[in-house]
Amino acid sequence: MTGFEFPPGFVWGTATASYQIEGAAGEDGRGPSIWDTFSRRPGAVLGGDTGDVACDHYHRWEADLDLVRSLNLTHYRFSIAWPRILPAGRGRVNRAGLDFYDRLTDGMLARGLVPFATLYHWDLPQALEDEGGWRVRATADAFAEYAREVVRVLGDRIGDWATFNELPCIVNLGHRTGEHAPGAKEPERTIRQVTHNLLLAHGRAVRAIREESPGARVGIVHNPDVPEPQTDAEADIAVGRKGFAEYNAWMLDPVFLGEYPADQWEGLGADVPEREPGDMEEIRQPLDFLGINAYSTRGFASAERGLDSPEEHYPRTDMGWPITNDVLYWACRFANERYSPPCIHITENGCAWPDAPEKLGGGVRDYARIAYLRHHLRGVHRAIGEGVPVRGYFAWSLMDNFEWAWGYSRRFGLVYVDYETQRRIPKYSAQWYASVARRNAL
Image (cartoon, rainbow, N blue to C red; front, side, top):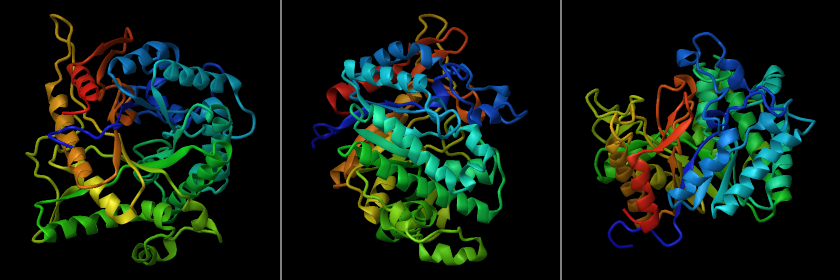
């Protein structure tokens, strides 16, 4: 590669998630999810917002796919809503829900877009939560059944499948702090059991996908905590490498190495999760890619000071997340050093700013987002130049949407959404990103 050119065939995409954009929460047989329930809990979501309408993508998907195509992108990452397919979480298949994703898939292909599907982006059917949710092993079986039903219908046209999006958020925000659905604050042993059951569900779903679609490319999407070395001195890098393992090994070691990290397992004492013979072999299924979602650093690593949080005056996005030097580079490098995945995709990277259209002209001049994306793509380029197998980049997000506990108050989109009218306005960053994809270069 020369300059800031990317390799031929590099994947350029953007990403969304079902509950954040679809709306139509009560239409065509969709069952309630834990986010439908959680968002109605007083004080759970800023402003009392819900995903009932969101971006109305369920009805506006054709125009939205036209937007994706207008950005010169090759891939579109989206998630499938489990409650649309199996309203009770298992058993009866809701054909109307499958038909929606059938149309959506055909719409992508008709526009020359490659579908990149995620099976679970946090919207567990409420019926399964009522039976114990991820606290019980039976939910892993239900997830494998759901994966099989979806891939049986769509696997002839969708070749890229991620099982889960961001296990750390599901576990820690959903079951430790209660900031996300289902809003639980569990004891440590339950939290560890939730993790194990999710990992087991991943392994069983991978097997189901491969049985229904033998040529599929299958992976998992993780959002690592990434300590950035303060300098490129080997002593600082060693501290960062050790921190990366401490933060991420509990969830990634079983997937890629087939075992929990021994030091962490022993440190849990009586809080270790229950596991049955064969579980770890089932979790460690051969994967085709690791998806990495990274927005900000966990802190700075140095031999002198250990791990330090960024100072309060460090520049931050509207989420309060510091904008640091090389979070994507180190995320990819450390993951590659420890796990050697055959392929890495940056499945999410982006930033929230208080965007608003200009009064004159109506454009959205989000130069800060352009600077953020350019900066982080340089880190991706550096990793590729050093031999890390990064094959694609998906900007988060296609459009402003329901930002979980923040409701509609945080805007990550390349496209501005007026939630009252559902009008879409491509921001300046959308034009910039389209030019990068077209030239395959910064």
